[in-house]
Structure formats: structure tokens, C-alpha cells
Image: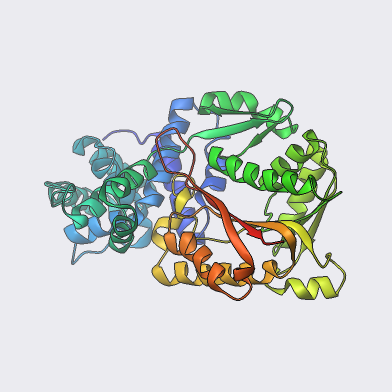
Length: 423
């Protein structure tokens, strides 16, 4: 009998809470793992287990059901089995080690379940022979199994991106996400590893650095560039940001404008009041100037204008659209198995509503930047094309677009389109 490791025990605690509360993994990792007095290697392994299990949970359940069709484990035991199966199938840990630790995980839940766990894990280990049960270089089903993607998701990625790019996207989505910081004072971006990030913690809290994905930084830069171009034509331009959230891009846009000597009015609109409270804290922390947080639904922008809570026209607008987040799977492991085609279509339709409403309030000669963190064409290029064919959209033309790709060590997938209103 081997002693249960702290990393696996902590991973089980977090995974159980993610499942039982339908909670997000990363805040729980910060609470239970990153604050523990444990070696960095143990914290890193526990984090890898949690993110891996959550992101591959659907595939893990398929593997377990395949091996145990008539003996489904109850939920608490399933949490333990998932960890061991993840280690065998995706971390390629020796079966004897994964089984031994899996039995101890089961013991920590219920001492009477160890016999079943031992039998079940041995059966699962045998069933993994030949995994992913096909040639992942030619068989989409085998590729989906190998990369732990829902079959529909893998098929759609291949259809939209082609086999090679889709395969690379799925593979990289299973790797740990890099961390990028912005040096606020010097306007520099840098990538840091986990150990280095710990050294920056106090400086981040103090507002000297901002954690922002590298390609999200590029999207904010695109929006800032449009604002500065408009500032060459209009004194103190008005800027509308839709979906300001916690304000990372708000900070970058505002600092870029003021470094360039641009005085402007920045109206930051988000539908969630709590996010505007967080933005207000960041306005204070980073010393932002001329930023006005507002809670409201951007699809009813005209109502906010009639209530005199917003100006009637804007020189520049930035829509950080609510989207599937499918370009950020490394950071948000819950997304992969929660998404479906109906959700994507619904989000694309909502984006159409936002574009149509915001476009009504763009001044002649002004610009509208539309952005997502989705890899899906329906939310990106197709949404923009549909807008440009609409009655209000025909007043605009697409000036440029940006779409990043996923690579190890690189940023997430982000998309942006610059739409200019004709003068």
C-alpha cells in the first residue's frame, strides 16, 4: 500500500468541488493549491492534474464507461477514478502507480470502496490498450479521443481549420497556458514561468504589472490605434467599450492613449455590476483618466442614450463580444465539455445584435472594433460578413482584421475586425 501524495489528494478535493458546485477550477486552485505550504513541484503537479482532469472529463468518462459498462461508479468515486485514468491515458504514468494511487484516493473517500476501485482501475488499464483505438492521423474519432475533444468539436475544427491546423490546436490546447505580463511603466510585454510569476506577485498587486494574454494585448492595441487615429481628426474623442469586464483591455487602451497625449472620454459598459466594481478598483490602482464605468445591456444602447447615461454618438467603439471562449481552452478547462453548437449559434446571434445597436451610434468617419476570443468562424468572420450585409452594416467597410493562432508558448486565439463608418 503506497501513501497518497499531497498533489493527488489536493487535486481530488478541487475536482470534487468543481463537479459538485459547478465551479471554475482556477479560483479553487488558487485557494487550495497555490496557498499551500508545499514544494513548488507538488503544487505544479496538483495544478496539472486539476486542469487536465477538468479539460478531459468527458473523454475520461467515456473511457470509464467503455471499461465498466455495467458498473458505473457513484459520483464521489468517479472523481477519484478520473484522476487515475487521466494519469494513465494522458500523462502516460505507469499503470501500477496510477492504480495504487487511485486506490488510495478511493480509500480517502470511503475505505469500503478500495476493492471496487482496485478492480475497476485494473479493468480500465487493460481497456486502454490500443488507445485511442484508431489512427489519429487519419481517423477523426481517434484524433478526438487522443486529444480529449468532443467528437462534434473535433469535426468542426477540422472543417474550419483543416486537419493539420486543427490537430495542432487541439494538441496545444492540452498544454499549460503561458503567463504574460505588461510592465505598465515601460509599456513592455514579457512572458514568465510559474516561479517567476511568484516573484512578481507584490508588483502585480501594487499595479506595476498587469496579467494579460499576449494576443489580448494585441487586440487592445488595435482598439487604441483606432482611437488615436480618430483623435487626429476630433478633439477629445468619445470612446465606447462594450464588455469591459474586469478591465484588462480598458487599462491598456487608456494608458496607450495617454502615453500618446490623447485626452478622450472612455465609457466602459458591462452588463454585470460586479465587474464594474472590479473595473473601478483598477481605475484607481492604475491611475486611469477619463474612464466612466456603467452597468447596462449594450443591446439597449438607445435606451441608455435617451436616459442621458451615454452620449448619442461615439467616435470609436470597441465590442469585446461575449463568445464561446474556445480560443482560451488552456486557461478555462470547463469550456470544452460545456459547449455545443446551439450555444455557439446563440452567441453569434447576440453578437449580431450588439453590432447592429452599437453601429447606430458611431459617428461618420468613426470606427468600430469587434473582437472575440473564439476560434469559431461563426462567431468571427461570418458574424462580421452578416453585419456588413445588413442595412446599418452597409454604412461600414472592413478596414483590417487580426486572427492569432495557437502555439506552445504563445498567446491564446483572439480575433478582431476593424469596421470603418464611411464619412
